[in-house]
Length: 115
Image 1 (cartoon, rainbow, N blue to C red):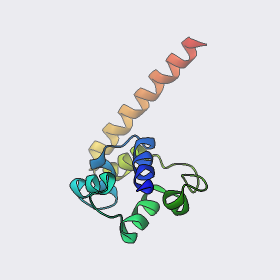
Image 2: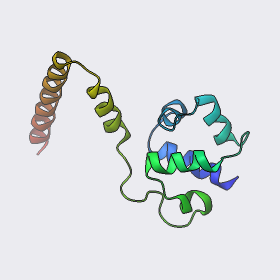
Image 3: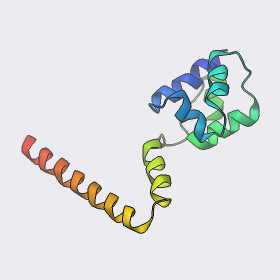
Image 4: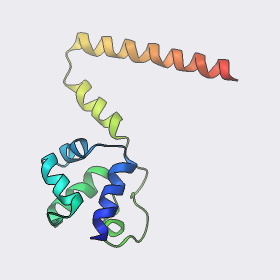
């Protein structure tokens, strides 16, 4: 049951809901909830999916030994943005890029004012 606590810890570290976490490993949110609460056993196939999707050290999840992530934790929000962006048409891509550039300019201005 200890690995279930580590499973939840991964999700919380990535700041994801159970639904968001489950979506990336292609299982239902109710199935994931059952895994996290111990009502269902964490099978190797799902564990492998979690480790691959979120760059989790399998040894850590099973035993607690080593580091949580194999390398830097993934930027899940960035990955979601990229996946969504790929599906947009050209007009919406340009619009979104313009909005991101404006937000970047605002953030840089605020950072300069704080100095």
